[in-house]
Image 1: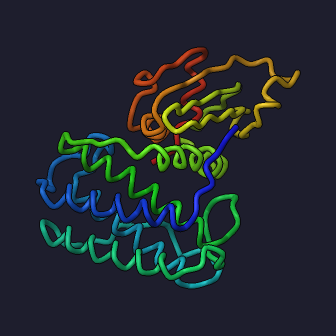
Image 2 (image 1 turned 30 degrees about the vertical axis):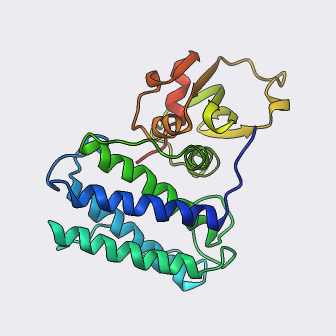
Length: 255
């Protein structure tokens, strides 16, 4: 198994690219159109959702402690619509960037994952959240651009080492077997073993353990397509797949 080791500079650089790309897309679109990759959402709701995520994360990171925030994420009523919604989003994004730029990644900060409770978690999470939703927005206007390969490979890693171990799997069914993912354009690969509701990333030297008697699947494609498939934005049939394809549903992250 190989992984990228992201840094604050890497994720902030991604935000500086993906944030303006999201803003440019929604600024030129009719905001009442549906977002096909997020069933039931319009572009207005996508703008409100992403801006509300930014506001919540600012509060988490800015406190400097590991206490959880009160209640779940909500999108408040009464948010602006039309062009005012885009300006509201820009303000939320700018405030998030200011907070993330200033904070040391080692500063204590709550998160929901089995990860150290440090602010650096949110640099990564916000870069990935923004990139995937930028793709959602562009797809709504039939102008989707892939996610940059290194960022997408980091996003695949986030799904596998953070979201799935945290229980954020789309399906609640048990899965058993070994899956091999390959992002050829990023020079990255991952082996993981699904065991019921759990998932474990594996080193390549351990995948032939004698206790593994389950079917395997292999998925190969660009890092962007792999990431989007893990998030349910693409079908796995858009990639090169071999073996027991039923295992792949055990890799999808919940929205």
